[in-house]
Structure formats: structure tokens, C-alpha cells
Amino acid sequence: MTTDIPLDNPGSHTTVLAATPKGAAICRRIARRQLTTWGLNSTHTEPFYSALLIVAELAANATTHGRLPGRGFELHLSLTTSTRRGTTLRIEISDPRGDRLPVLPTVHLPNAQSGRGLTLIDALCDRWGTIPRHPNAKTVWAELDLAPTPDSPDAA
Image (cartoon, rainbow, N blue to C red; front, side, top):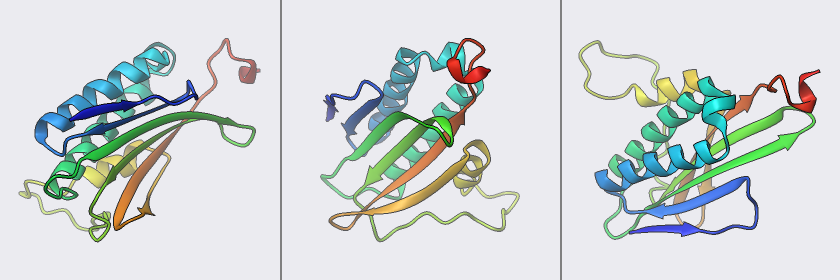
């Protein structure tokens, strides 16, 4: 189950996916395609690759910890511009498990097989958090501030 939701905003993209490992893989491909369409792969290469890692971690968390039988998860990407921050890439992954909020670990066991995803997200993005979503769901979001490019009007 993959559904692209067309929006009138060309700086926004939403897709609903199955909460399976295949759905997470499709999520990563869709994010790469959309970020490339926006040109981030050539204008903002470091945030481009950071965003791909963030999407991969959030999609893996949604399919592992946020999964409910018969319910999918949603990817939402958006580019916004404000006078305060300039251009910001916002990544949102929503899943149906509002009762399981992500918590940044304070201790990492050296031989642990999991538990580093949120630490990675915290290191790669400028801000992240969660938003409750009705009914009993949640959205985990991360934002990356994009530096002005040399040819943009904000670069001066």
C-alpha cells in the first residue's frame, strides 16, 4: 500500500505507506526522489544525505515500534522559508502508536544491537520532536536548516 497525496504546495510531499520493511524501503526511495526533485542533492549535499539518514531511521522506527496490524505510516516532507530561519526542510513520519513516544537514550551499551537511531537523528538535524496526532497516533518530526546557496538572494 503506497499512496501519494497530491498537494497544491510544490514544496510539500505526503505519502502513505505500509508499515513493513518493504514500506520503509519505498519510503527511503520516495524521499530520495523528492529531495532530488527539489534539487537538494546538488545545492545542499550535506543536508540531503542527512535527510536521507533521518528518513531511514524514522521509517525503521515507525515499522518496528509504531506498527499496528492493518495500519500504515505516513511520510511528509516540506520546504518552508521564513525570515527568521531561511529555508527549512521538515521531515515528518506519522504512525498509529501514540502511546509509544520516542525517547533519546542517555546511556549506550557498547554491544547493543539497537537504540542509536534517535541519537543519530539528534546529531544530524537542527531540531526534532513529537506531536500527538488524533486519534491515538503521533508524528515524529525533524528539521534541517538549509544554508543559502551562493546564487540565492539570501546569500548576500
